Image 1 (cartoon, helix red, strand yellow):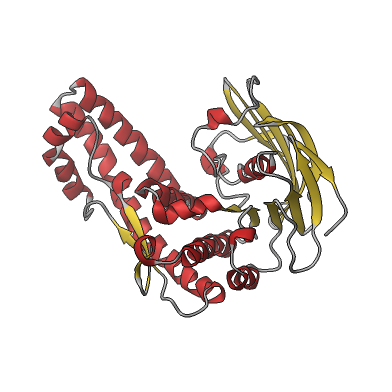
Image 2 (cartoon, rainbow, N blue to C red):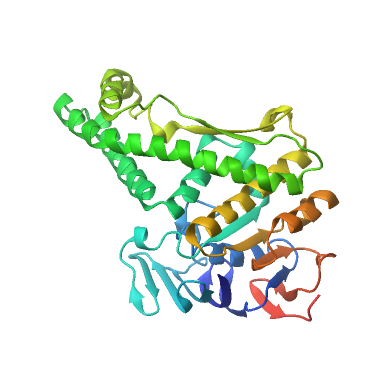
Length: 359
């Protein structure tokens, strides 16, 4: 897949922009705070209508605007040239593909795979478990509709159980929601076990291109509690009701799972060097891209947000070796790349984008 054109209105600090994105390598050049990341963020919405920078979608419209609009022209391996239109305002979001409205996110997620690489990816190592769950959930949801459906239904059921816990719901009411939640918890657990093994295998292959030596990268699934079958999980929730009622939320289940990244030296967060951590995060994103390509039969677009300049020369060379040349790459930075050929360049200032000579 590749972007061909983008028209963007009232998004972050961008009042209006139209960019020709038909080249293989596109670079957004400019000082920090001018709108480079904002444009990449808008492009990243096409995978799951989610920002890779924030979970608050209310932050996306331009200051003082009620909403934003984006029109993407793409070349797609499975459906050819297509136009994707996204409008968002206080009423909600409207998504159209070639003029036809998309009503269910499940029919859209993963069809247009994009993989962001940002300095914020270090939070996959250093941040809370929710950061790692978000990465795994998006990866698996994009390639497995069964997982996406189970995850959506599970979180909806947990939210309702939490509501009952806070308002003092009866045992009968809680039992009903626990019976609804339990089968989805089992599916999530099974899919995560299989999915993490898939990610781990691809991560090991990619990391050999980026690392200076065989450092033994590992990704391990750390469930918050054993989820054997639906009956056992229902009993677990029942046994924890008193505790959950005191706290006001469900304390056990897949929404509390974690995933551990490590190297031969030990846990990556505790023992890996800064360079090793950055290399591991880049490898994890490229592994995600390769999984998208393998499972979806669509080459993803790489969005490298001011991250290539943070890699040391060896790991930067490893990035280019690990990243297939057939992928479209749209990158940003304060200085032009000094390696690997020519880029189509846009100079960015105060939310405006001006085409420059190729670098």
